Length: 213
Image 1 (cartoon, rainbow, N blue to C red):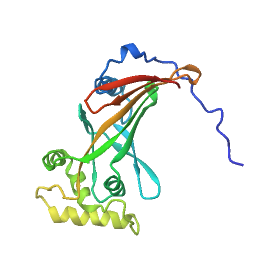
Image 2: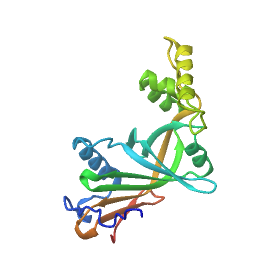
Image 3: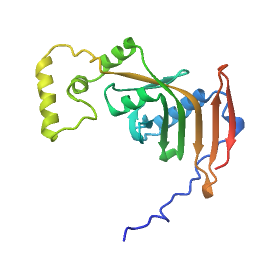
């Protein structure tokens, strides 16, 4: 019989989240939290779960945050991948950061759009050469016979570029998620967690509300 994990739990107690202290701009608060998790030494603080809606199912995967500002959150991917097809079908997506060492989550809901080519070009040029070649070698989300097939494709593209500069493939680039809702979640004892959500309105303002745990 499969083991039940009903008692595998952690009682969170490190911090609290007061509505009066979070300010009125969630992006400022996110920047503060993100700096704190970076300085904490946590593994992959930029890792975020991206959820998209397909034609039949909802799909989630972990991608890496590459930048953020007042406009939203940026990540990069193959434009022919499953996630890209989902986002072309429906631009409504969700992001989730979970930083267990700080007992925190940030939940983001918004609309996604492709970045300008100049921004994708600049970021691609900053990537390690092997990662640049991998963007050409992989037909992301497509079936492969075995690992050798993947490695052989990489070697062929590596030989093709030799010592030449690797340009950005047209099927690879960046996305911007413009947030419409951001929730900050702070773990608290007895599962009575602190939750404060910000809703974005058409006039550019944010309205915050405390949510019950």
